[in-house]
Length: 194
Picture 1 (cartoon, helix red, strand yellow):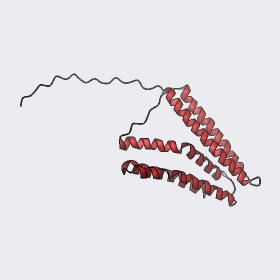
Picture 2: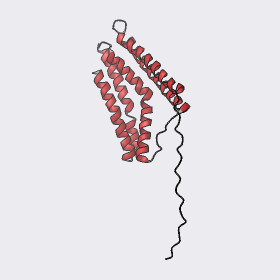
Picture 3: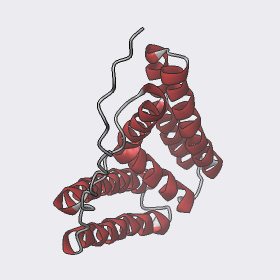
Picture 4: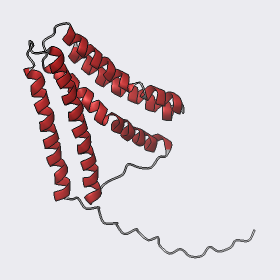
């Protein structure tokens, strides 16, 4: 049941995102679109409640509960960023907004470092939820799977940190401005009588 709800939350996230952005930009209803986008956190709240109820009803703490905690942590850390990214993309495509920014050099590294900090936040939220689940299950239950998920969040932070550092070590340079083709000189227009 928890895995089904995680899948439903992920599908629901993208459905609400598409509907909210369509209302904002295609239907020209920005407030209604924003209201739909504000429904996103309710999905994670429902997942948290169902996971807690599942554990309370005696379900063995296993990988599903760990995945739910990581999913909630990911949504807390990256949900707003994903919404902002999609909003800018749709605004550019349908509402004449500025094009997406391409980053190079130190600017790209700073961007990747900020994303890594979001991964740290994701891991912290997930680890805290997993620890709450460990305490909730108590000493009588098997919490090995929950502890493994805590370790996995640490590994994710390390792996993403290494990837972010590659943008510092091997910085991609901005392409050189290509010469703007000059227009052929035009002859002055002759005035016509008439």
